[in-house]
Structure formats: C-alpha cells, structure tokens
Amino acid sequence: METHRQMTDEALVSRFANGDNQAFDILLNRHKNRVYTYILLIVRNRDLAEDVFQETFMKAIVTIKQGRYVDSGKFYAWVTRIAHNLIIDIFRKERNENTISNDEFEDVDLFNNPKFSDENVEDRLVKNQVMKDVSSLVRMLPDSQKEVVVLRYYKNLSFKDIADQTGVSINTALGRMRYAVLNMRRMAEGKDLVLSF
Image (cartoon, rainbow, N blue to C red; front, top):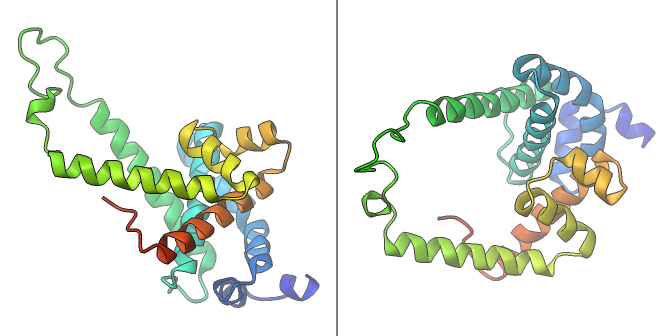
C-alpha cells in the first residue's frame, strides 16, 4: 500500500486498468476532497453534489476499465471534466423540464399523448428485453453488490444513504457498485448480451 501512495496518478491508472483495484482506491482518496468541493461549489446542494461525485467516479471506473482513458498526466483535470459534463447535463435537463408545459390546454394534449411518441413497438420490445437481461444479471450478483445496485438504481438512493442503510462507508458502497458493474459487464459478455437500446 505504501508503494501505491508514492505512485503518480498515471501509474495508478495503469495499475487499475490492469486489475489492481487498490490503485483506484488511492486515486479516489487522493482526489475526492477537491473533486467534491468543485462539484459542491457549482451545484450548491449537498445531496446533488454527492450524487454527481459518485456518478463521476463510476464513469471514471468504467472508462478506465474499457481502456478509453487517454489524458496522460492529467487525471485530476480529466475527472473534474467528467464532473463538469455531468453537471451541465443536469442543468440542461432541469431547464428542458421547465421549458414546455401545456397543462393549461385541457382539450388536446399533443406533447404528452403516447400516440405521438417516437417510441415504436420494436423499441419497446428491445427496451423490455434489455431490462429483463439486466434484472437477471443483478440477481446473479453476490448479495452485497446486489443490495447496492438495487438501492441505487431501483430505489434511487444516494451512496451516502446506501452507506448509512447498509452500515458501511461510502468508499465501500462505491467499491461494491464498481465490482457489480464489472461483474455484470463480464457476465453480459459471457452470455453475448447487448445491454443498450
């Protein structure tokens, strides 16, 4: 562990990409305070900041494991950019949700009428199959990982709430989610499942 602490960010990223999970724990501990503070200063809401923080590092994990990390020597800048992009997406979504409302039109509701939706029967079938596949993969996870996935994605809890509810640290909850994602990806590849729609 001491040798890990003395490594550069790039060396740790490389070690993590090659299966050394301790290396990512060091990266997380090294940068978590600065990244969280950056997010909190922008969103000004602790719950939202925690969610963005957690999503940022989940995205970082997936990107590194997929071999798509390319910003050599600039891990902190790279992870901060991920957080920044997630924040922009949240603000865009909020703005779009508040832009159009046709609730005052009682006779005809063109915007919320399913008949005018872009989703067709084939899209719905694919989406339903993907959701069934994901559910079956979640059921195959070890109990501790399954619990975190269910609480996060099915019950919409923040990682702080998950940590409180399961009696573990936030880092442990994040770690369990990381392993769950990796396990689900491995199982999906083994079964030739396509988990996108």
